[in-house]
Length: 484
Image: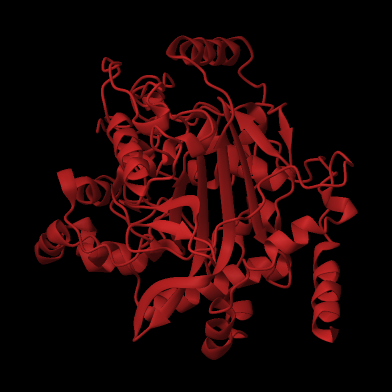
């Protein structure tokens, strides 16, 4: 009994700091424009770097954003020409030195997910945005206990509906070598789990997931396929998810096992998305056109996400997105409005997404594995091309380990390194143990400060290849855009 009282008290003590009812933006009204967008693409020796093409492309319908022009200009509203992510320019050398290896390793091996549901059920008043006495956002119900087929199961062996999948990490930021490991799970509505008689059937569920995976990569002309089982009346629309689809994305520290980097137990963030309404191709095309017109009519007007809040998440194009992040004691707490605004930009308005998402169209198998130890081939030379067009392993060109591994003087590619990458992308993705621990420590400093709204990228030295301000519409001086 004493143990329960102690846990309850410590949880209450941890959650009091953040007030989700406070929707005032305290630092950056344009937080939906990410810190990576302030990258300097031409260096002092006139070498050109283009990480921008990963996000800004001639998009595939029903994504009608078509923002390939953003590879060549900083097309920001006037307010956003100043870089408000001041954490990018902080020197954390002294703070990182104070954290010893054993302390950070002990910290990242702890599970900070298990208490989250309890805290949300015993809802603090400053988390209850609408005052109804209950949590209206995602209630954590994944056990992170996966069978060999990727199905998450509860303590009784029952399906929770969450399914893990292997996927090719998106370019740049999401590589472990740049600071975080992660995994992504998907869950379809219950009718997709069941056979025609309404009985749960894992084969039916997996078949429906495979149909969906294929449809996410299909052309917009294939409207003839349906799901199976109890969901046989649901048409599989190319590149659009069924209403009720959910994603769960854990962003984690980098652990070290047997001298090698791997996924840690401790989560930096837990991100959740749910599709709540269906928008047709025509709806999405109209929205994209309206967005272009609004931009032309009022180029300095900031985007406002009017639907949603810090409790339920923010709404964009049929989806609610919300997230949880570490509090000062390392426990997960809901993100406030401004912290959530940082996440919504990429999911709401860039050409590279598929129905606002990144990971699932890049899926290749059903297994809980995250983005570590992916000893698979560099399909279509995707990662090779990123390295060659950016001459770095991240948007900030701050990853010296990747730079020295793949390039000689003046960015001349190292043939042997690129040959190894061809059959093993983990050679690029995974950091050394030494780099992993430094990145863990650098991010822990941000946690201690609770300074996420000023930038949540873990680095030690101030970033040199990022503008503190840009000239509106300024050309990046790239000679050509890159078309994938």
